[in-house]
Length: 314
Image: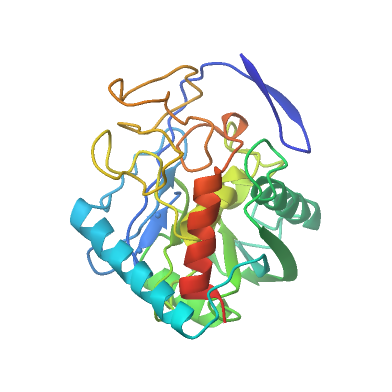
């Protein structure tokens, strides 16, 4: 058993059996709950299904898709370096949270400010390394909260006409602004996100289940790490299990190879026995329960910094 300190609470973690699915796809599609354009048109890139949900990831990246995305990021970085603006020191990300409600009651999705502020604390603690991992150099500044009553948007699903309508109406800022949409999302999902790309995707941003925020009812996914995971996709991280045991995997050297997503918190799990290291079940980019996830690695921090420079920095 392990105990995870998240700067806000302690929870004992055993080997749980809850189901969690996280998806990641290419630029322009969604990265489901964990959900990008290297995928089929209108597909999502990182989906995370809540317990008991039947959603699956139809857009798990192929090796060809990953290779294309990697070539594109290298080209973008090279172009920035030529212009002399490829040096990353730190980044404060303006963050806008859009609360989508079925009605104005708490049961209808009207989350209190306390939950939103707690979510920002969770996000900042994770990216600052305060929960046990690397300091990524990113901080998130809540600049605005919007509240919208719209029963149709409330059950939004990835890459749908409804999602396009919602984001067209509500999205704020440029590529550097993280827009987080909080709703009673459909499809049995916890959330999804979109990878960065050269031209700002109209669907850019993160969508999460409202009850996955700290203090919500989506136990054991109620400590706010769905937003953390999706923000990782928004900054170009793949799942730790991308590519399985063979090849370059998630393109990060200090995350051990992993054959498949981890569910619950299976301490000591090792699905790639011929490669060094146990499965990175505590990494924010796996599918573990919130109380089991507590770190980004230094390699992931560097990858996010490169992606910020390539796609999101001015």
